[in-house]
Length: 115
Ligand code: HEC
Image (cartoon, rainbow, N blue to C red; front, side, top):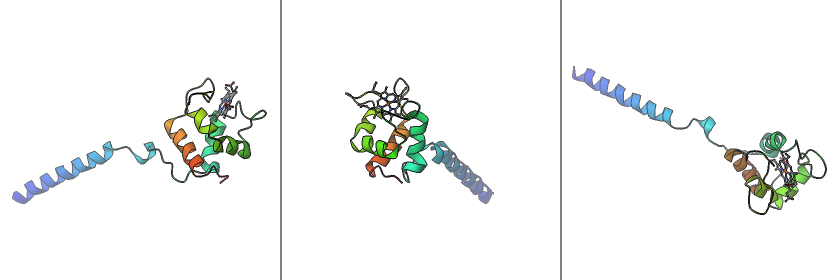
């Protein structure tokens, strides 16, 4: 009988452990900024949010050299974080998600490479 009670308690504690794990955010909902590259991450964020207006002259952000230029001057990060003194981008639309901003920042901080 004692053994059974012990087993019962053990299963309850194991079960509550499992519950806690399910409460914590799943890996999918955590913003992952490791392994951010231009081709696998930044390019699609820019395509989805900026190219509609910046797909050609005067500023084609689909062109990597142009994008690197605004990234390295600090302007890219300023416009997407709606910093003072620069036009907020994407113009007239909602700010990018915190995760997209964090990914672009990670790419800039790593040298805005064409990778
Ligand atoms: C709806 C059109 C539109 C969208 C979408 C848009 N922009 Fe712009 N962007 C503009 C216009 C127009 C300007 C010129 C400045 C102004 O009129 O505010 C501009 C200017 C800029 C500038 C130059 C700012 C300066 O001070 O010279 C940067 C950098 C920029 N946009 C980046 C972006 C990025 C990055 C995105 C996507 C996250 C984006 N834009 C999305 C219309 C847009």
